[in-house]
View 1 (cartoon, rainbow, N blue to C red):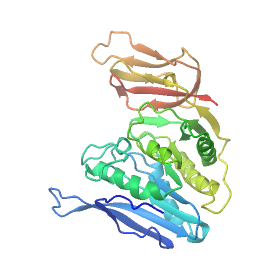
View 2 (cartoon, rainbow, N blue to C red):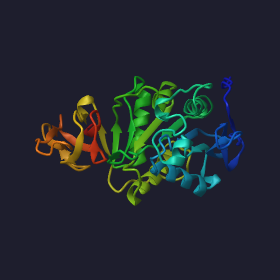
View 3 (cartoon, one colour):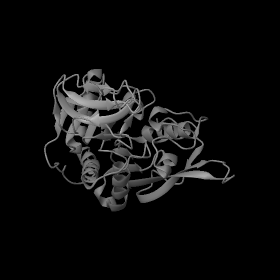
View 4 (spheres, one colour):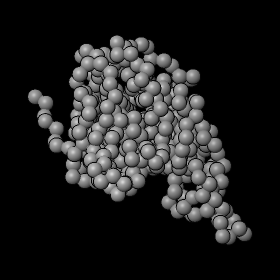
Length: 335
């Protein structure tokens, strides 16, 4: 017997169980200076055809990440209903206040959506959205695909990722789905801070979860959008929801791992960031990967940062200025 989900301040304008394809909105009342009886309307789409598994596809968890937002709009608009066996729920701008302003966090309450899960029914706007997604959407899903990229401050070699899980069967299924995505890299990713992430909510519920980092730098490219578009459809084909065969990428997916915190290099200084290695290059343990130049002390020797291990430079800081505690690079190793 299916449990009744807890009450939410969000009301859907859409029937998730009716056959066919439709766009609607998740409606959340939001009284503010410019609209006393206003609301936030978060776009949501559904394609349902017959029986089969349910996929929840999410983008805009952070508002300045674009490949997923583009791919999910395309998927919803271009997918024929007859090509679907089951249900696809498309949430192309989950943190819609942040999506509208192109910011990582909500301009309303400052909330980072991917640190707000499982949310609160009586919380801030960000927490209310997270609560609805947890209890009214994730609860319906067999598969959750959460599409991220680097936003304005990070850039990545595009990858699809999973995590280490105590349920080895689920971990194997997730790794296979990440490989099916067809990005240049498939990664067993280490999260330095996983508190409040959607990832954990889905995985602890025993559901299949795949996430991505698809380039970044606050925009998208023709290449990163091709990877996202192919990858979304590939995962749906892999689990049998979308008709067709999994389409290989331009090159075989390189399966990689981030075994521990030595995969990350963090700045202990503030100043001008000079990268010494580009994305996608191989590095060696001890190799210089960045220099930090001191803004107000031009005669001072810059500080050199080194990789702690051999591997592929998979992620990097983007802005030219860094502050103490900023991420500089991440390295992945072959599985």
